[in-house]
Length: 317
Image 1: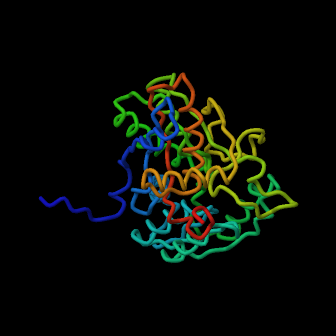
Image 2: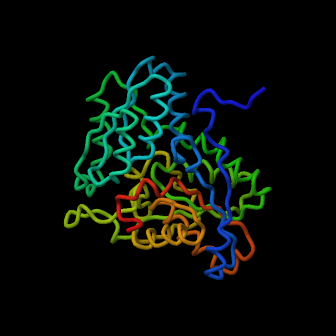
């Protein structure tokens, strides 16, 4: 029979691992950085996994009705994934997002037919804003299915069931460390939990933005690392509900310029066009790979998306 798929949902997952051999060689790194290239998912990011799991959960619970509307807050990628899948599955979408999101992500969301409501980025300087705003979203959209990507357990669970097993399988169980960022917390929490269950010595590192890359009342529009949030020195109630506080063995801070420089290096040295969040994650992986204890060992960096989503955001200019 021809190997022909009937829906983009069948194309989610089983993304490739790519060793960043030239990048590592150019920096004389002891460890082996291996990228999990998630832009091979059909809508272009790691969030395709969580989006489909959330939609399936909504359908099974009958909270998402045929022809219904999916609503959430997004920094772009989850919204894009939900909008793409919704288009195929017969739903409409409405998303709330900061007004500093990459113009390329806005264009993609609109291409898939999503309704967008922009929020001033200055609102996010108050840690208490988000929980209150999420309640308002639900109150303002009583008939919609609230995807709740930040707190929906289907998010980390799909990474426990797919992303982690894929990495374990494709490295023949030789993965020594996993590096990711925290947007919703689902990827690193679910993947890290699975890998630590296979081998408790698997090291989990999280990349987070430094102080110069975070909005403040004085500077509400800094150059930010889209979709990568601070997790250290943040009160638990202000962290995404899907982030497992116990999962990270180390948190590595960096500034947006370092993430951008790393993304540019990968484009020019490996021919791999990655986004700013991916640049941040590879930067953090580079710090691990420079350490003697990781010499010759596999460090998997989960790269969330493609650099094509940041062409208008200054990453490559």
